[in-house]
Image (tube, helix red, strand yellow):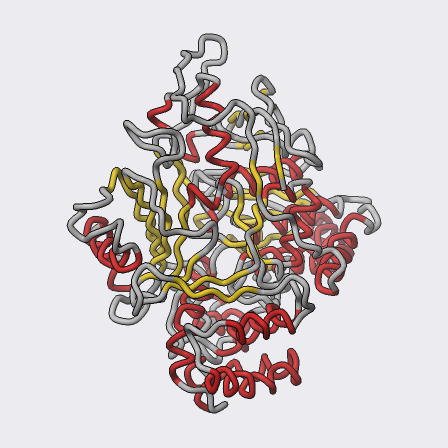
Length: 611
């Protein structure tokens, strides 16, 4: 995919805490094909909520002479084309669910639905409720959109909560990008999975999926062709062990919830070395825990999608930070249909009526927010903190006690030179401490090149490009983002309490093994220019064995109260796809309950009139 253009800016104006993304500045216009005018924009000038605002003095811009090795004014990005996903069964099912909201009868009285949490689950819920003709009011406690995909800005450089990968096997997310007209914001990579080789520092082992073969033959070919990680006897035993999952389908997959990955592998006669070589890394990447903790259901769901769909395991990076490049287009869409999105709106208490139903949400500011229905789309740990006392013994809510978020640490490091031993891809570290990593200055080309174009226009100093450092040419610096996992001798519960410098020291020691010619623990080679450590004490729910029966449906037993979030009942578990699908299912439940909710509000009005 080749993109050409110049740069544009989105102005986020503030008024009483309400997000307004509809007023655009077009003075620098960056053209993305097939995007709406609103979602086409890059929010370079952001509100205080996303960190320091980048001020672009258009009228009196100070011109900075670029080095001859700098980026040309015209932005050119070449990446792998978007795979053919639109005709798969899962994509079509997701598209049908999306269309059901747009095609549903317009409500005579649109419902005001108050949604707590502007992560992907809350944004999805509000988006599809707005599509169905209702008026969502989305409340976010923090100063930034995105929840678990949030990002912040430090002196022009963005840092995030984690490495966010968009798979071809994410049909609801792929539909969402298409519905918003931003398919081009996904940068697709070659169809491979690349693992570092701990016993051969600086070397990698690849699983390459043949484009000419259909699923599952392309996956089988990738496994058979790789001879560095698994022996032929191990491959055969692994394949035989997987046969029940491939034949038994979803019913078999769900029945394995009670077993850990390690227990299941041993039960199927798969050698422990297969778990060590492949599934430690995969378990960390999927849920930030080890195979002796992770439910096998999680692995089988991923393998099922990867093996059954030709492009299921193909990966894409977002071309920039998620709050601006994904969340803001959803906000634009919600607001264009009459919905409202508010930041800095932390819920203090769920206030109840005499019958135990929700009366209102009380904010920390003392403001009371009332609606016709209420949705909690926060992480499960926050919901449990705010549950009213007389709800806690209801089985639906009591089962939530077993669902607990897993600690995650994400590290961004800026080095003083470009790291050479990287790929334009996600890399599985296979280290006892780190999960996955990526050189973001390579994987997110569009983001870097847009900033290069801004610098060329004089909007930025060449010395302050993200991922580019003092005294170097454009593109000569390196940004390496890594995900810390609660694993092995370094569980995240212990590292969460450590200082940033301790975490960085441990990270560098591991990186020195991955980049022996370029990084050393004493920094005698590549030197750290700056870093950011982002700690999330409770991230996605920990997918332990026997958690599945504890996951709630989106419709709660409390009339007019609903849940959304990856921990709720949906088939993609703890993932971005699971969050988006949960929001759609939550919106579907509310649309189905429309008559009941209207009658409930009318009853309250009659009751108030009589009293």
